[in-house]
Image 1 (cartoon, rainbow, N blue to C red):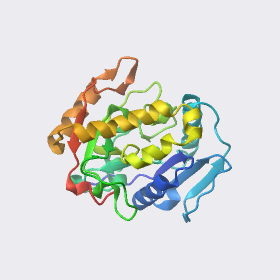
Image 2: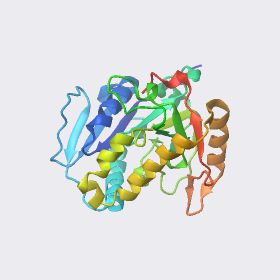
Image 3: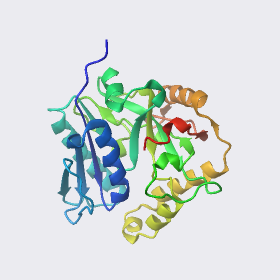
Length: 281
């Protein structure tokens, strides 16, 4: 007997990032329906150029502070909004605008079908896949093709194995990296593809943004640039046998300063993304 389909929403907050938001809306809209998407613009000065029928879009006062204080303010805001939405929904998905929860196509399930089959008492995480540009093989992104048709390699990252799906009101940690005071479980066959490190020219443009630099983004952007370097230099491992080993490792080992966040024990594992994912995002 198939599981009863759960009612699922997705929410995010963005500022000056419609490039990724367009893809976010297109992907989650195709999975969940546009009317179940909730987009919050960080700043009443924000205005989207595109038209997104049925998507709930709201500009809210800009959350001030350096990168850490602003991150905390944004996640507290989104935790509150998710709590409100869970009065009407069974599950809420929270991600950044450049993050996409994807079910392995081998399972033959849509995202809502997969999540409806999961027993989610508080939250469920996906295995983090930090997609990087291989500078020796791959060119800058073009708009008319799926991201994963243009990128073949990724770093399996504990940083992006986030507690993105919740079933009840909780306090997310900054960036959705964890749920405060709760354990985590990384589901088999569920992946969070992060594209913030996937294009070198895009990163360069963000380094030139004085507002981001003054807010303390330099270290954050440098970390993303390292992903590109690692992906460009490493010998990739095969996906199917590697992701399950890493999932088990991350489920077992915890950050020494945060028991409810996974760790890779400093291992840098680069994989080649299978062709079956190429048309998804």
